[in-house]
Each structure stands twice: as C-alpha cells, then as structure tokens.
Image (tube, rainbow, N blue to C red; front, side, top):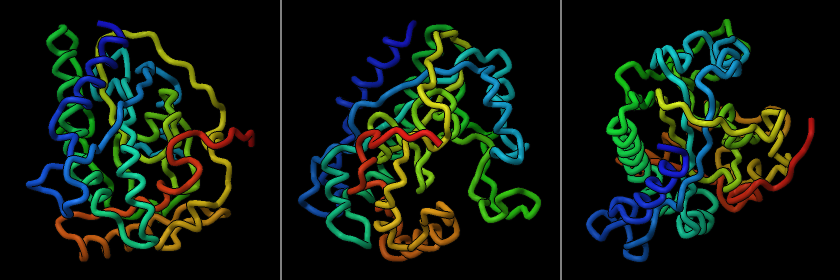
Length: 279
C-alpha cells in the first residue's frame, strides 16, 4: 500500500458515498437537496517522530496534555493528515447572509463532520486489512477536549484545545499554515474540515513548503470584517470566547445544528493560498 492507493480510495469514497450529499429526508430547505458537501480531499504525510510534535507539548504550543503520535500508537511510523474542502455550492450559500449561517453550511458542519468520521474509519479499515495497525485519535476513547481555563499558560483564555489537534497536525505534516481566524490555509483554502490517522505503515514524508506558522496568511483583514461576532482582529487574532458565544446563539436558533463559517467564506483564502508572506 502506498500514498496513491490511500488518496484514490478517499477520492472514490467522497465522490460516491451517499452521505456526502444532502438528501431530501434531512434537507433544511428544498433548494439544497442533492447538494454535495465535500470535494476531493488533499493529503499530506508526516513522520510520527517529527521533532515538531515535541514542540506541541510545550506551553507555547498546545501543552503537556498533547499526546505524541507514539503515545497513541507505540510503533507509529506515519501521520496521515487530510483536508476535505467544502463544495463551491456550500461555500457560495454561506456568503448570502452576513450574520447567520446558511442551511447548506449547517449541514456541512454537522452532517459533514459525520461523513468525515465515516471516511476516516473507512481509510483506517483499509490500513488494518493491509496489515498495518492504525488509530484515529479524534475517535479514540483516549481523546479528550480541555474545558477549563488555565491561567498558567501564555494563552489562558484559549481553553478550546485537546490532546490531539487536527490543525496543528496538518501544519506539521505540510498541509498549510494558520490565518488570523486560526483556521488552517491549505492549497485548497481554509473552508473545510481536517482529519488524521496514525499508522504503522511507513510512507515517504512530504515537505513543509513554509517556515512560519502564518506564512500563507496575507493579513488582508477580510475575515475580521466578515466575523459577525467581532471575534477577530489584526493585532490580536481570534477571541475564542467571543466566537464560542456566537456559536451558542446559532445553537439556540438552529438546534440541534449550529455553525458559522463566515471567516472562511467570501474571503481571499476561501479556496486557495492568497499570498505568501515572510514574517
């Protein structure tokens, strides 16, 4: 099994699996029936012993609660990270209202995450059948999200973290760099979802084509203007508490769904890398 096999299997699954389309039975509005949620994913393959993972265990990274790949899987060789970009239809729908998320985006956030989990489990099963022990940290019993504040860290307000971060892992594997909104900008933009698999299969690692964690962000400020919660600024980046408070409002309005995504749609980095800067 090689990288091409994995990428082809994922592309076929995304194109043909019915759960990647909004069905009549669940559609919040008639105009989005049949709409595709995700386009073909992009992949990047990193080494399970990349020294950058050690950096995430430091207070300036995620913290000592971050679990190294070999803490998840002792014989881990490769970390497979991938990005599922939302379809153009999903992204376009979410630019029509300046405050509230589009019906299509709500499906993308909730049913889209369920589909992403299904795809990740499918890819894991392929690796297991080929004889390579593998694990999906975000779906494992040992995965947890931090819910309390820690005043002893450089970012005491950022309690929105876990012991495995899909975006940080994607950065390490070479998929992209962060933007002001704290989304990760990839070759296919920022509007989408990330997932990862740790495996004992040893694969050639991809090169990180950047040096700075914000290298792909042009600091244009478009996401600052788009954010209905006023949670993003050029100087301070993203205020996670303000963002979370607005998401709570969308939960009240659209329960059991929620979402926003305004900082990811209708911006220069929506579907591509807008500009490479050196800081």
